[in-house]
Length: 244
Image (cartoon, rainbow, N blue to C red; front, side, top):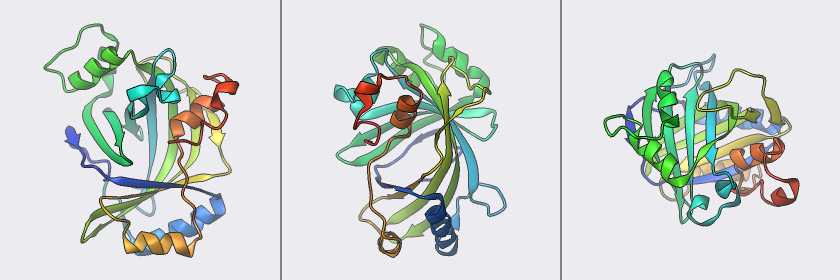
């Protein structure tokens, strides 16, 4: 469940719970997680559990993904970059009956321009992503970045993962590349806590939820960012931005 560097990866279905917490409560949860869980093996920073994520999210001209029209409501295409890395991950996130699965392929940052071409190359690692983008009429809509704290553990029932995402920033996408322009704050007063696990909710996470009186709620970074940036008419976003 950590951001591995495998060139191609198909992840198994996993359950995911989200919570919105205050920065003060997030600090308490971070301290608890550092005492109970191991740092993500691919993270860094002073505590060995932090990294920055920047992603390009895709949608149609009619914002079918945002509005969850038909099958567009079950999957998202995005390009993810960790820190200032020279490689990126082409990802498809699919939600089926409340469970998540992810397909991802690693390509060089300089190769992203290939996604703008009208013809696909079957020999390229990003072929499947390129083909799906064209077939679904998807283009980059916005760029979202944030800082993540990630802690993990292995249990009898498989891996578990806790993340805290903060300092959420966004800007409209300019094309098939990552922009260095200054991004607008999306929400500074809340931190996104996510708990991921393979099967039933582990006892450790049950204790966490009870100890800090947490209430789960659906939330989408993409939907919140698109609404904040005014990419979708305000009348269309009422009651929509918090849904997954």
